Image (tube, rainbow, N blue to C red; front, side, top):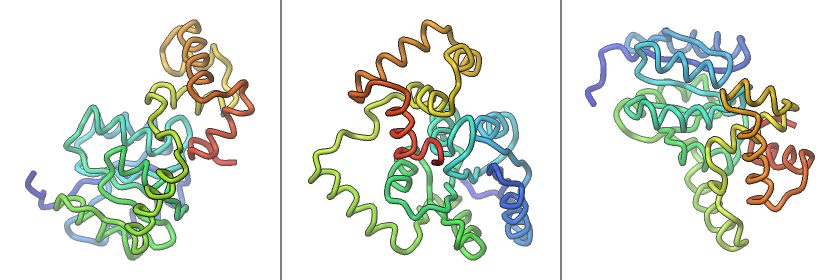
Amino acid sequence: MPIPLVTRILVADDHALVRSGLRKVLDTQPDLRVVAEAQDGAEAVERALAEDVDLAILDVSMPRLTGIQAAAQLQRERPELRVLMLSMHDSEQFLFESLRAGASGYVLKSGADTDVVDAVRAAMRGDSFLYPSAVATLVQDHLDRDAAGERPFDVLTPRELEVVKLIAEAYSSKEIARELTISVKTVERHRENILEKLGMRDRVELTRYAIRRGLIQP
């Protein structure tokens, strides 16, 4: 895909200060321009699908949909869109899941002032951008999980992960059904399947799982 003369960027973060800071950094570059903002993952997907943007910068931890869930959905519905993940967490789990979701790079908020411009340009060239220790972290993560015999992250479907996130955020079945535009009966079936797949019994255990997966913050 040819690189546009000016890359049009969507910035999604639930903190207005972070969005403002990224906009200031990116808009100083003649070849980069922030043209849209979103304050949660669901809005990010809506804006990215509705507007003319070339790249989306998504915070890992956002309400409604996480950045990782949003990235996975955008990968399915608009695969040509470049995606960068932004996080305050130097976490191998978030890094691994971000790449699995189709992200071109992972930028730490602590280094965003200096890294985000390079990350955007790398993504638009079709390259990956990882912070310095990320490659070693990713390799070690694979080795550790293989050694521990852990079940893969994708044991749950994207829809089931959406349901887990909302359950952990204390949504009722009716509220989940309304949010996801499905029936209450379908929500309950998803809940049963999730508990069976994970070998769990109740919402408390699902909430702990959601925290470990980075679906919600503790």
